Image (cartoon, rainbow, N blue to C red; front, top):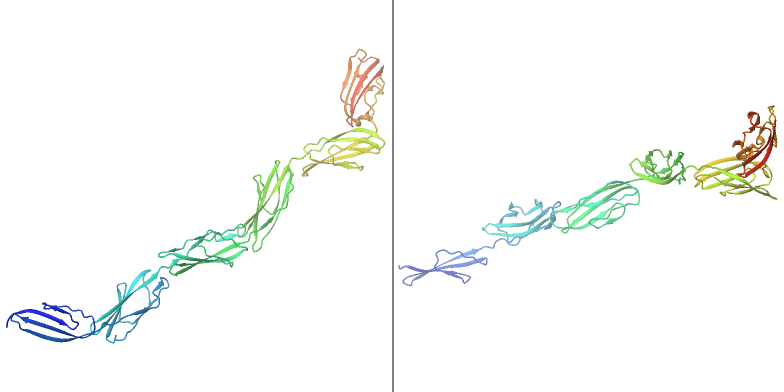
Length: 486
């Protein structure tokens, strides 16, 4: 009888809870534990009930993995449950991967995550007593770098080649840490962007590039570079030529590991040509740059150039005069009257030669001599002139002192003896009557004063004056009188 006024829960771990009908108790140790409930009424009476409970330990869990940090492309995670002593009551196993679960397996092999990142992996065990245990570990899936590079031109000609390599590698997470280049010719580089690459010989070169990230993930890219042979063009020195004379262009070319398909000439005057050997005519004087290009079967080109000097043609001319005579012979002075000449080669018959511009030469005997002058301008263009000259001690000119006007054809003309015409280069003859009037004037050495043709010419004495330039360029002035007979 009486009214219940208090309730007291007593636990074997020395804890107690009062005045509650229902309580939740968390025990910290497994094993047998005593639970007492003491109730009291309003008249001071109490009662106690005792019960024993057995607390079971939850299963102890752990797992291993082959590698908790792997690269995305090569990932293959293996997870193994590690049994522990006292886990005999385990009745089920559950693995949790990014909210997905896999039940009742002690090992998971070659598991792959859908993308790179950090993943918590949880293992949970369930016992037959309704107890469970779990453990979680972080797994890292690392981003793979993407190795990529470009080469401006994969196939190049050997002459002047230079491969420009541009690194275009990327990574979605992390950083690119190391770079390894193999250029296929026993050379390498660890630079992210290597300098332009050149090779010592023609051929094919495999270029390999490996990039490694800060997490140790790697990728490789490769390309093949090709170097084709270029021709070697030889062009001999071209001395030059004359305006409107053909220039012979002769070249040669060689190649190793290919063929020469064609040749191209640029003559420097706006005109072009083909073939290794050709001719070209320049219309104007000047210096022209002639360039030949050899083109191979792989369109590799090699060129060589030479300057061609085109000059105007010289014109040979000369004159001479009888200088003097002494015991050594008859001395002449030859002087050049050529145009555009810069060199002179004289040949004085079979008697001697000279390279002076205005030489003196002594002939040891009289007669005639063939004088040859060969001139050139800068030893490119030549011209030749031959003259046959008399070699005389001196030249005297004679006129008759009397003429007849009877018309019989004998001695009826007054003038220079025809035998002396060859020695005359300049001439003038004038005749005057006794009153000073000029009755004849001529500059033609072959023209005579013909008396029968002029009835006004009276018998008597006439005065003449002759001016003659001989072949030695010496002037003679002859004055005299001539008697006209009728």
